Length: 456
Image 1 (cartoon, rainbow, N blue to C red):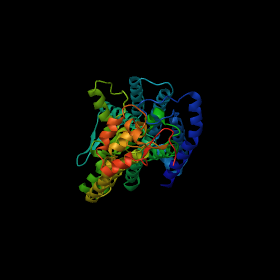
Image 2: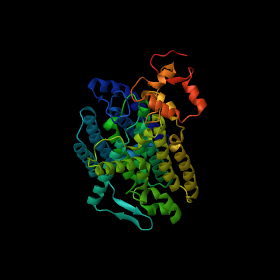
Image 3: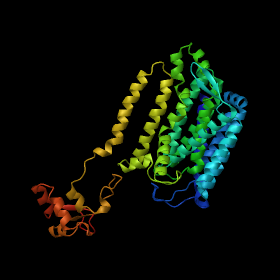
Image 4: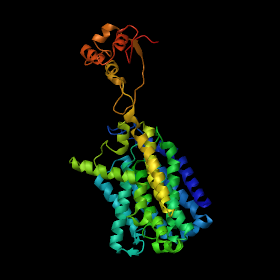
């Protein structure tokens, strides 16, 4: 465990230290696209954060190669390491080109398939599908390659789709990497299943890359990972999944658990239910990906056309702040990922199910909190200028000035703008009690957002 922690630390440290120079390079190179209508940030922010993450990955592999125990993992799985570097390298180059000049969606999809194909051709592929009680069902080489390439492409685009809020993609992939690490580490060191060894190393590298980049990417972000980072993270997540699934025989675990089929079933939940663990750890981005494809296709647009209807955008619309929306996504990702892992390490899943149900209830309450916020009376909304009202995001803008409202002003507009005249105010005042109306009509009433009124 100490060697893996050292790999995580070195990968994170190198990534963190490289972000500063990479950010300056991105600004000089002009990798700062203008803010689009669907973007959440309001100022141009440099991309190319994937360059720093790639540097951290190489540093982590170099350190692991010189450690006592991990060096044996290198020697026994050298083909997997080479396949990982070749696939990540191609994906990284495509991402850098897209961050700087922009790449057509279909061209980018083709590049993703090429990167996945090169990696799969070198050996990182689904060879078998484990089925408890039956054993490993062998796949033909062609079918195994097709499934592996499809898994990589889906993972890459799922991670790319959630890269819409500061710190969201990096944090969720980090959670997924931790879940993979715990599961594969238990298979490798708990049950001596050597086939899981590469997944432990790949997960540790993934965690380090995310931890090193997140301090620069949390709201407000100083730099974005861009496609060079998000596609690389998606590919590594897929590699970790393939390294575990398709290479672990369920009969081996049955022997290690004393022949208990019930225990084996719980342990293999992340494997034999169509790659449940890799799907569980990115369940939210996968759901977002599927919903986006259906939504855009139904509207007659390209599935790759960008919009502002992703899950994280909807969280902002119902009233959550930027940071809270990210934390909510973290919460659900961790609940699904670690709940799946916890279910696989216990012989009785009742406790895990009850705990997950309790956490789900808490998450739903937090998710729906903005719907239960009290709303200001219509009369108050009518005399507050539009620029200071509660917007669709549910957040109030800062109050700059205040002025005294006189009865004559109520006949025009409290903001001095057309459309908020006497009829609107009078109809709104009718909803208040007589005492409240007198307060608003009196010389002591105050309206927010006035232009140039006296300060208190």
